[in-house]
Image 1 (cartoon, each protein chain N blue to C red):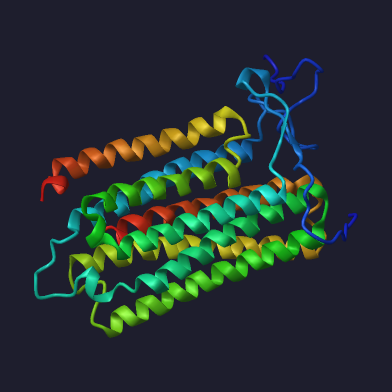
Image 2: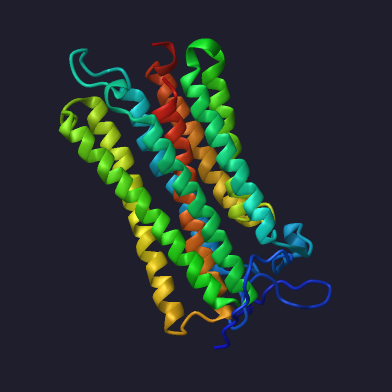
Length: 120
Length: 209
């Protein structure tokens, strides 16, 4: 096994990832290390904003809950698309994950609605 | 019997499956397809646990401990930040092995494991504080649903830690060549998944009043 000992953070594009034409893919690159770091900074900033929103709940009133959910959703999507590479990988992976996610969302929304969680 | 071959592009080259991997009917790695299917099913598990928490929220008797009594938001925010950053180091380790930089891959994997261990240690500390304040799994509905949800997540993180340490040892022994970068990717997918589950837990369980 050959071992590489390069130093510093790579700014070169990541490795080429190909998906089949049947999957609607074309040749493309995974993000570079610098892009990953940018995403991580955005995630950290969103988390900080979430915590601030928690503390100013009284001032913002009804806006806090929707804002927190939107920010959380943004973090979720950023991690899935960039760190888990769903943005770049085959659509089949996306279908598997989104199927589970949507099934869980709909099933448990129905359960919670049935038990009247939103009207308490 | 018809034989199955991997789909090819215009140049006739196979896609997705790694060198040495037998052809698959989808042209994609079976292991990666299985991991995504597994993660899709995990959404149902954590969906159930989060739903149970929401269902029981505010249903405990008035004279028992409530979330507002025990949650330490600054502490949990730091834990959340630590887990988010572990996702960054995980993806950097994957990028490193895909470049053939094994030394850096090991550094990032070890950093990820350390950040993950910090998160788990924080969770153990949080549980200890809560129990000292009188909230156990059998105190009330809040305690039961909270410990089951966060405990399951903590168990997933712990399992991920074991996988990360296995990657480190395999790499040290030279049994994780660049051709097997997909192994790191699979562990990474699992690790990122526990991160996104925590993103949801942090907002729905800790931050939303």
